[in-house]
Length: 320
Ligand code: CO
Ligand code: CO
Ligand code: CO
Figure 1 (spheres, rainbow, N blue to C red):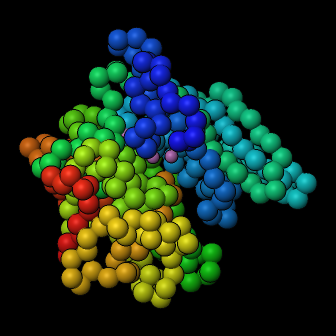
Figure 2 (tube, rainbow, N blue to C red):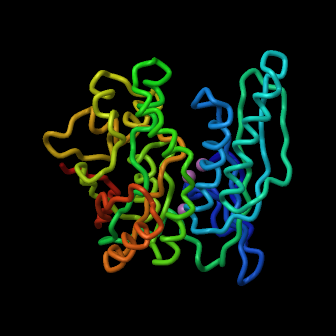
């Protein structure tokens, strides 16, 4: 993207500059469009579940901006010569049911022939231009709240190798298919300085984008970070996706780990998530209300995992 001409349209409120979750375009003084597109290859074998996960993930970028989704379009690739078409219709059914749960319709789309299945959505949403929650507004003293547990990448990798229990797979699927809708509603009700959703770059990667965009640093308390149960045992057996290892290598110069925090811990914090939770920076004075609002909406595992600090070098410190 850095090779492309720079954006000069003054109505572009959020474009490609800050690595945010969605594009935001001002239509009038009271209305902005929030737009995202996301798609990927199957993370689970069951087509219906894959459709649900993909839709939840696509909507997540909208929720991370504090916006209200209006409708979605499907994008799919499918090997029609080698797989029965019924598989495609079950993927789309999963997506459609998740969209219904989010309160929106899928009103169009496009499918091409492809060597492997791919599915995703372009989601269109609206927001008041002054209420956009970017990933670049965090301030020193803000508390960091994470609304889903980590470990999805490690558990789905172990699943492909047949090395994880059915119970853990079911837990990971429940986390991936859960919408970030309620978490976003709590965030909008209370007010937040910044938000992003935790996906492919892991908690550390997306937090790094937040602290760099905001001109601050962060401290993470490892013991307070929610992690799916079997994750620690799996990472100690050396199981982690290549993407999570690459995340950690990429971020290594930007993190300071306290003594006793080793590679396994850092790998979990950098684990590439599919349809992960929201990472919210909330003013300290609002953090109790935020926890109450999240609890009231039954967001299953929301935890305060650290805070934003002053740091012109935008580093992330990890403490026990
Ligand atoms: Co995102
Ligand atoms: Co995304
Ligand atoms: Co955002």
